[in-house]
Length: 454
Ligand code: F0G
Image 1 (tube, rainbow, N blue to C red):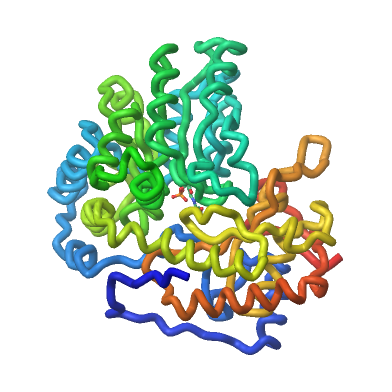
Image 2: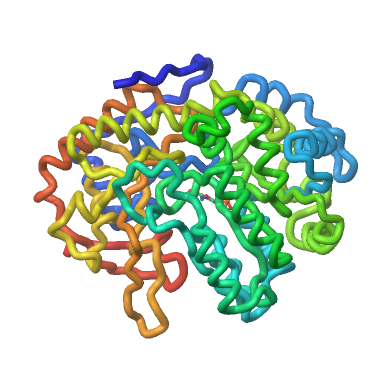
């Protein structure tokens, strides 16, 4: 086994609690078996998400103290804009309060009723905004993307043949834009290659289509391109970043995942696109030099984006995740392979084969793992889907329990603890029963819904 080394030291700490199992039983019952409804004081390792909870560096904190606050024209904003121009080679930058706010603006400007947005895979908030504006989503990920166990290095690639087919069937004028999500979240943080992006770009060019790039999980994907794509081995992270940016018309990101702990942004070199989106920023986000972010976060984001060019920084997430995935795989625990970014994903369908999808195996696994460990994960399966208009369940392609690895937050012994508890639960998997809703919200039910053992 390869031991990942922390390339940083801990200088500020937050105390954690590991409450006894009797309290955990009470806590998960109070939370309606929904890990979103647990409280931090009852959680030992919070692996719910990497959003807004990655560690900040000493330099980011120092920069926050130098932030230049003003409603309009702040120097801090100019520093971020200059950093974006330098890294992405894109002239225009619009700040937003978080990733889904960028999605709101982009969908409002570019999605018309009846249009289609082809993408490697959807993200929950992305799809919601496209559908809200009357468009629809077509997922055209390569077939390997949905195979849980695999050794394909780039499961997040778009199937370029399917893209061409979609254009032939519907006509380019029905396509609002093509979207690539880097570090594809819902299939287990799986990367795309630089070569795939080039091929997608070629198809877009042939048909005059705009390519929109969701860069929220860029840090992980940069690392995978560097280490898994032989043609890119000798490129620096900065060069790979620029090569990606050169292929996109619009780059947007959640800065909760990339570069900071809050905020987001939209970047483009098209003046036309910039002017169309700019109006909506002042309407929905804030003035153009803050966009709903605090000025300190903007300053930290400028520093964080630069730190993303550092291999010893962006390798931390993928290396710790690989350690966890490979150790669990050796113990025969079903996990998504190859290891991706964002976190370690347990395959609940194989972990709990005795549970039908109608009893939410991934939700049941999330609840059981919390009970036996105090580790909080996030259900990414049918519970996270929405019922059809006739009330029938939409069964998701995969039933996953995501155990996110916030960057530079957990130590290796904490990761080992999680592995040990998951291993125990796997060997005692027959103890885990299914769940059913007792309170089921109509929209985004996974956030607030309450469930009971069947
Ligand atoms: N795009 C991707 C790929 C994301 O993973 C997220 C958020 C967003 C857009 C939306 O950004 O949260 O800042 O509004 N992902 C979080 C997660 C919520 O836990 O995976 P946001």
